[in-house]
Image 1 (cartoon, rainbow, N blue to C red):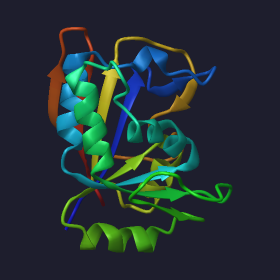
Image 2 (cartoon, rainbow, N blue to C red):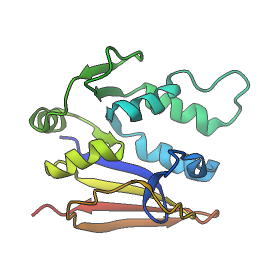
Image 3 (cartoon, rainbow, N blue to C red):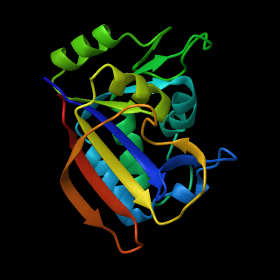
Length: 187
């Protein structure tokens, strides 16, 4: 049985994108990128909403000609090797291999997917994660906090739900980024 993991790169004040929709400030350096790659290696299925899928699907074609950063090629391989489920009522089709489209998020179907999985399942994007938290499906939270405050935007964690977390691991990187790994305490 797999675990459902919510992972996000966020500002120190808890936003995945700033108020203009930008996340350029969140680009990880090679040390952080390698750490994220290792976290993602056990993921067999990614769950995405439309916006996160549209952001992430660039990994299907990376690295491009002239990319010489091994961490980029490594993450692209990790991403391509996993299945993807995209939840969207507005997308007509998905354009990447190993990807299927569902019109709506179904907590019971997701619960079955996790239970039947031999590997971890990752929920990407705070909007979809909010629905997974509300359904009691999230087992772990992996936050990569970047040392910048953006003052507003899309919050990484649900603002309208109480979620109790138990810290499992914390790691500080040379550039000031911090990785926090939590277990969700289900009541």
